[in-house]
Amino acid sequence: MAQLITKTVHQHLHYVPQHWLLQCRTLSLWSMKKDPDLESALSRNRRWIVNNQIKNIILRYPNHEIPLNALQKKFKTLDLQGNAHNWVSKYPCCFEVHLRDDERHCCLTKRMMSLVAEEESLKDSLEPVFLRRLVKLLMLSLHKRLNVLKINELKRSLGFPDDYLIRIVAKHPDLFRIVNHSGRRSSMEVELLHWDPDFAVSAVEAKARELGTQPCFSCSLPSSWVKSWERFQEFDMLPYISPYSDPRGLVEGSREMEKRNVGLVHELLSLTLWKKVSILKLGHFRKEFVLPERLNVLLLKNPGIFYVSNKYQIYTVLLREAYVGSELVDKDPMVVVKDKFGELMQEGLHEYNQRRRFANLDKRRKKGIPLARVVEVKGRRRSCENSDFDDDHGENKLGGLLDQEERKRFYKVLFDDDAS
Image: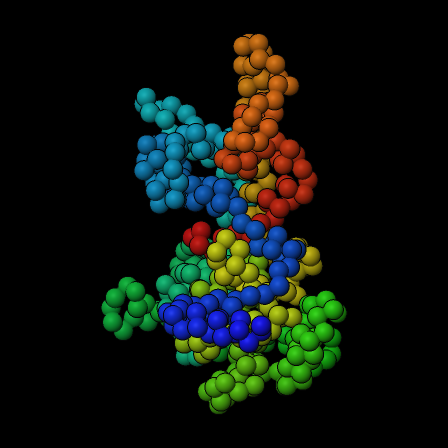
């Protein structure tokens, strides 16, 4: 019977296009046992992303206010449908709408502007930190220079301000220079002029110095993962290779090269705010960082060091040791400020839903509709009272807003890499 089944399977596979089989094999390489805590840490909230973009749009307009008609036109770039006025009205703690010259305008609230000022002040005080990150990023590259467009892909993850070329690069002509051999804007690069050995110390090496031990990776897997632990211990027995060393003396595909590549990805993740990065964007630096073409294989072979997720159909790699449960071990000051933005938005959304709830209750009382009546909605029995309070497929249910864990998940989110 088993032979018959095997023969039948092979007969069917003969008629399956080869590119389908190749795609299935490729997809299988991305499988990794899900970690609920890390999946929660990687949760993104599309509403926060959109509101952050709206905030940035408003700040670019004169007097920090935008006509709602102009904002409506920009909704397409934000992948939004519907009415701009209805959207911003849901977040009264973040946005204000007022009439000026018979036209509705939108601006940021005082509390929102206060957070914007706090973030800008923090950016000023963190310039030495941004400088150090940029220097280390360039030192990781093979030729100590990187394309500006590629740096821009990581600037949100690294916490860089939008004007980092002026705020950081231009202020330090002794360290950086702008190179553009072709004259095209897309070919502009930032080059490091001075190698600082004090910066050429990885996070792994810095931790080893504190502990007085040899540099080594830490494994953040449960003890029940016996085979993974055995592979990790075997891998970690190889001498640590600094990601700041020249990789051209290593043989491609060797265990030493793998050790160096793991160290480089570990160091890059250590430089980011949320200790995570899009694998697609990381792959854009493959040549500059001398990373393997099959980067996914490298990451999945080391599950004790990296966690790979496909949440929201975006492949992301996260540094396991940087988290305890779903919480960052060490929070960057920029992360703390961004948490405050999330809290303010959540507060406004809760206020909006409460107003809407009471308004609907009042309408029912005036119409004489029994509040406890249960109606059939889409094949399910739901309370008439609750059915009108659901907003956007149930995302704004009042119960969820009042739940402490739900609030934590909302404003502790890791921000989308693609939100820039």
